[in-house]
Figure 1: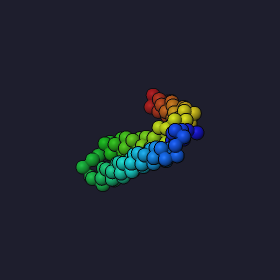
Figure 2 (figure 1 turned 90 degrees about the vertical axis):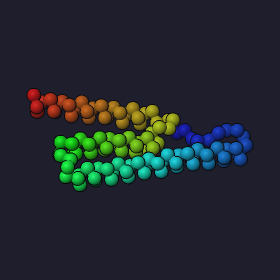
Figure 3 (figure 1 turned 90 degrees about the horizontal axis):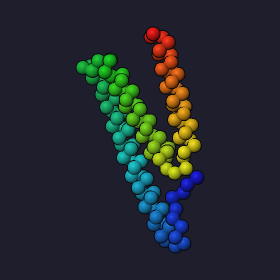
Figure 4 (figure 1 turned 60 degrees about the vertical axis):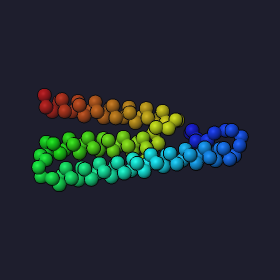
Length: 111
């Protein structure tokens, strides 16, 4: 597991470095959380507004859900950090298998 430490040998420099990295990480998490709340409110508005049809609302909400999953993976679950190659591989492999399975069933049913 990768850590956010420098090995300068000076405890003060290491502490400042860790504080700076943690502050940056917290800033990204707060911004991401705010964006996810905004996207959730947009999804509620799309459902609430009767001017949008069902053919528009459902794909729009699915798109917002995909964006929120990406935010959750990369900012809250720290997938953007070093040392997460194997979990990323399993996650994307599972996503690929799921999409191929979905495509197969849709093809079988509709054609």
